[in-house]
Image 1 (tube, helix red, strand yellow):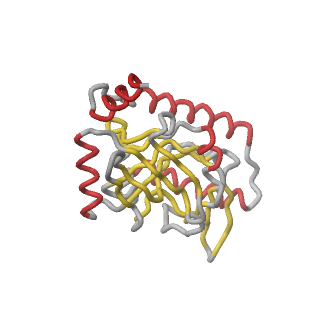
Image 2: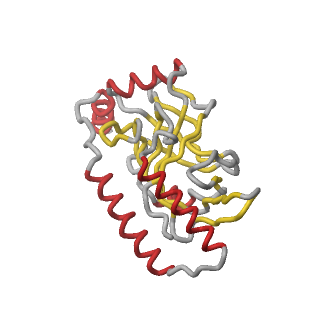
Image 3: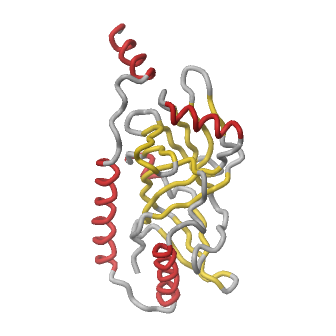
Length: 228
């Protein structure tokens, strides 16, 4: 059974911090390694160090507010979002734009009203392993394609829609059968993953608004370019 839907995971991160000065923004972790999640609809999950390595090297990842492409905060392609893996997990460092929604979000984070980070991803066909533990199923993520990291108001669970939760239960049930020796068509799984991953990339690209050329940050940037 392929894991093809875009999934979201959330973490309450006490070390999420705001930055002021010439480049206001946030720094913290969007994911943590080697910690078992709560029940995700029939299984638990953990993230293995290195799971984000390929995306960090070659991906084009956005920082969004509540996973909404209308509220883009930073982007790796432009250098305003920097991702890395450390001993704790997926570390982010984002420079926010000089827009009203970004300023409002910084205030909400400083007040402690927003203290969770989330990331949207798809699991590569060979990017997870499954095992039985304490009578239940555990999935370990070892290679994922990361689409966005987001400060969020509410976690993805249990607010995620019924359809996604049902699919996650189906995945867990299928993996139980697979662990029992039921064969899987790996080539079909890989082809399906790539087609859906490409569709997701195209959707994000098409729905990412262009930078506001009249924002304070953009005007400063243009002035620096002209001066040099």
